Length: 103
Image (cartoon, rainbow, N blue to C red; front, side, top):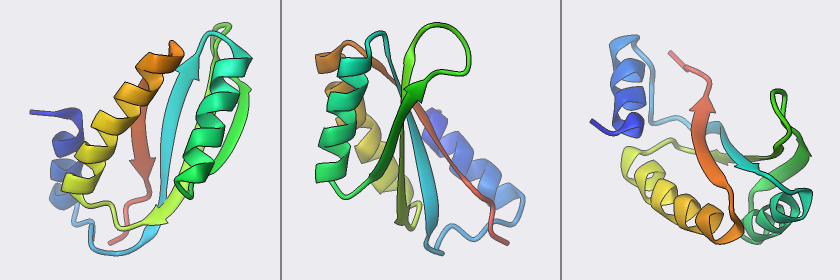
């Protein structure tokens, strides 16, 4: 089972409403600040709000992105493919997403 499907399974298990719009947060890590900034620019062109900062652990750079959206499993899995490709071109990694559980 994909990590994204597992999150949706847990949301359903705890009674979450996955049909409501809410902020969804995405995490991208890069070894260089310039690559994190480039990712941020690309995400902003896709209408995400972004922030670049040093990662909490280690010497990597975090590109943190947020977008208000309905966390639909097909959309999230499609974004995973897009984000993984974008990150690989910049030497980084896509670390997944999170959102609040709305009951």
